[in-house]
Amino acid sequence: MRKLHEVLRDWEAVIGLEVHTELTALETKMFCNCRLSHTDEPNTNVCPVCLGMPGALPVPNEQAIRSIVMAGLATNCQIQRRSMFYRKHYFYPDMAKNFQTTQGPVAFCMHGHLALEVTGEGAAERPTCADTAADGSLLERAADGSYTVPVRILRIHMEEDAAKMVHVGGKEGRIGGASESYLDYNRCGTPLIELVTEPDLRTPEEARRFMEKLRETFLTLGISDCSLESGSMRCDGNVSLRRRGEVRMGTKTEMKNLNSFKSLHDALAYEICRQAEVLERGGAIRQETRHWEPSGKRTVVMRVKETNDDYRFFPDPDLAPFDLSDEFVEECRARIPELPDAKRARYQASFGLKRKDAAQIAGDPAVAKAFEEAVAGADAQLAGMVANVTVNLAPSCVALTPSQVRGISELLAEDAITFAQAREVLEAIDGTDEDPARVVDARGMRQSTDADALGALVDEVLVRCEAQVQQYRAGNTKVIGYLVGQCMKAARGTGNPKLFNKLLVERLES
Ligand code: ADP
Ligand code: MG
Ligand code: ZN
Image: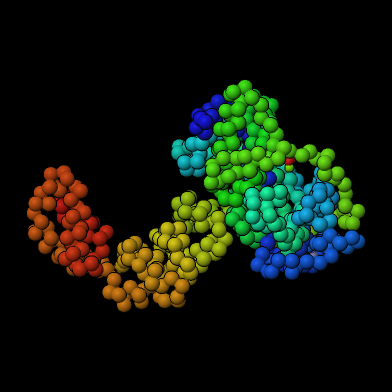
């Protein structure tokens, strides 16, 4: 198969995502009062409603409706004042009542959009010959190739999750091949929101960035733990190809089992190359659902697509149409916290952070909260160091408090310790409430920043290392490393290497 970047020069990939998010932050299920829990014994959180007993009546969860309206407002959707629940019929043991309660043509949230930024290496995946967005507008690229595209959201609707099935023995994931299959109805009836994008994405990287952005947004709203790994956030990737310049869309395939950002990217990249090969051979793409096999790095056919007619959709007679009041929608709007983009911009403006660091911190509400506590009242230099520690050192720790992050950042900003020493200190205090400065002093790590005392050492070293001094002056400036090392040795490791470097250069170039 040809490489992705070659294929994308000849073919335009058209990608749309369907993203399911379990509202794990809620206490109870969508239509009954059963507890939501991922960890309870199987089949302990069940009742006549979620077990589909005949005659049991559903009662919608108001908090779930609040959550979906917040998700819709955060993604610029129009909140529909009137919408309905529908029945989507199918026969399978994971839904005992034989239909899933979902929404019809009008969902709570319709016609939204998000501005998607693609920065860094991933921006190069989109060939520059494709610098037009789905709405026809021209993309503007920054000097490093970064760009922003609008991605339209068709809808976000409310539905319920099915029971979890566990297949034992035989072929994984297939009832027919397994020797035993188990059902856990604890998950049945879990409130789920499904977001469907318009087919506006053009590269696997854009799809991955979109999914990341959605996850950051929903995490910040506090409506779900958004774990791709555990399946509380799941994504199906739809993709088709068309020749560059062609307007009509090609036949799409739908990818399942994309349970990491890498899988989402790699499955789409594989499928784009596979489709190109079929089309270039003169073959046709079959509309089908395919399963990504991360180990084999390929997609395989799961089933040929069922059509909507098979589901016999109709309005659920047990659930009255919903009329949302303006007050309700405004109340939801008032609950929306500062979203990641706004947070990122604020960090850049008020603390002078680099865009990448600011985005990384703003993307995770727990990290952002700790950062804001650690950075309170700091000047620009210290704030930059707090960001540096947050992005580069803290992630390898288990439990650092904001005040420990602040303490370490201050020591670094004062040049009292090096980055290597900061790592050692963090290892010692991780998970405790130790003050980093105390550990630094107790271990005799604090480095002298006394320019006079260090200067005397530097002068000694320069006398002793005449050969290197001559080499430096002859243009071999790399020997500075050796000289810094000699100074560190003379100071028994308590001198600051950055300061030594500065003092050496001052003397060597005078
Ligand atoms: P289905 O009925 O097969 O589920 P939908 O029309 O509901 O298809 O679309 C599902 C997803 O697939 C949406 O995200 C949509 O943007 C995307 N999509 C639709 N048609 C195409 C196509 N030809 N190529 C790529 N993606 C598509
Ligand atoms: Mg669909
Ligand atoms: Zn129940």
